Image (cartoon, each protein chain N blue to C red):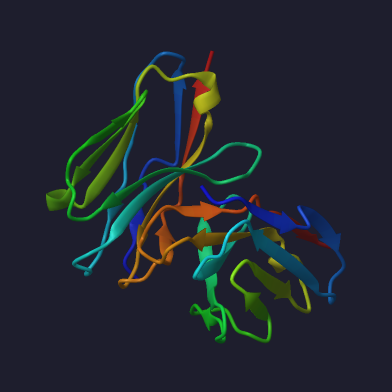
Length: 115
Length: 114
């Protein structure tokens, strides 16, 4: 299984500020995904991040609010911009190692609270 | 959107009981993958199983077993002789549109009481 780390593990932020979440994988992966899990809810895909191209966002998520970087095959960042209390969620990155529908592993998540 | 439905919001059992978590999905894809994940109170998402849409063989792994019925679009998960450590939220998911992105059900919270 892939070893995935996320930083920070949790944070409490003020309304109107931005937070950048880092996702590091222990091996090169083709695709990385960012999900949001609002309190008591299921997971919703925010975007797919491929190295060397712009991220692909799902309906309801926009680049200005959730800019993503993917500078190499082991690392990605998600920024939550101009935060509001509604952004309080767990943000998780996941990887699909080979792009061949193998096991998708998730990072430990970043628990964000916006005051 | 093509949904993944986990009709059971919460289930409570006593230790050593068997419990089945239901999952029904919608899809127009010919090829897709189905997943189950466990999310314990600590919050991390633990991969349990991946199933190819062309492989309808049931699978057993220790106390866990999965029943895939393509004809009814169901992928149910059974825990035999449940233990307190099985208490968690369990999510069923499938791939969408021939990609690797996942669509999740709303989850079933399982509580196993001693």
